[in-house]
Length: 202
Image 1 (cartoon, rainbow, N blue to C red):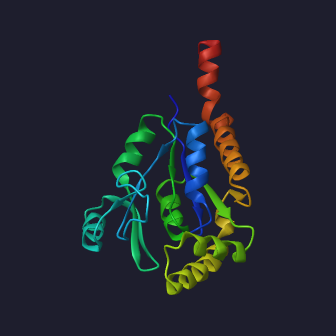
Image 2 (cartoon, helix red, strand yellow):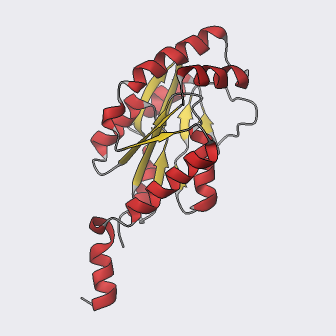
Image 3 (cartoon, rainbow, N blue to C red):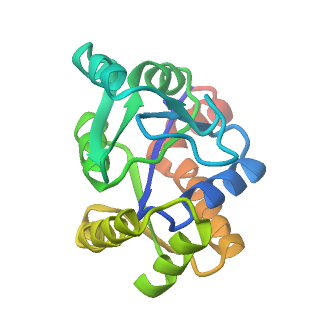
């Protein structure tokens, strides 16, 4: 059995990561989405344990001190972190996992999991990203400005990623993500030895 593949999906807030990740799971349902923990308040429609684990700042800090998080960062005034145990358990069982950290978190993940596949989602333009953020009607003007400033910073980190997906159409972007996952699963370095044993009995 091959080890699971760790996929890291990053991109600015509002770029549509959650939408295309959800569509990935419709077509490749065996990919496990690792749910992050956050100190921010839930947005309308978000569910505990499905979108995030919603915790207080003090609780997130305690989890970090206990070594329970792969990484954690403060992003636009809120903490975000990735619980380590479920990720390690799924990978050890051969199940592929997808994470959604921002760029600083992706760097931390890449240090701990050098074989991780890093994917960055970009908007068609910063103007389009701003429109998406305003359409959500969940952000203050100050938060929108902070998220756009952070998006500019994150775009400077594109060179750290193996893949880039342009999300000017959610369906097409989801298809790109599905193609990346399927291609990585067919890498000879991952499946070659198992295929050889299966066919030749070696």
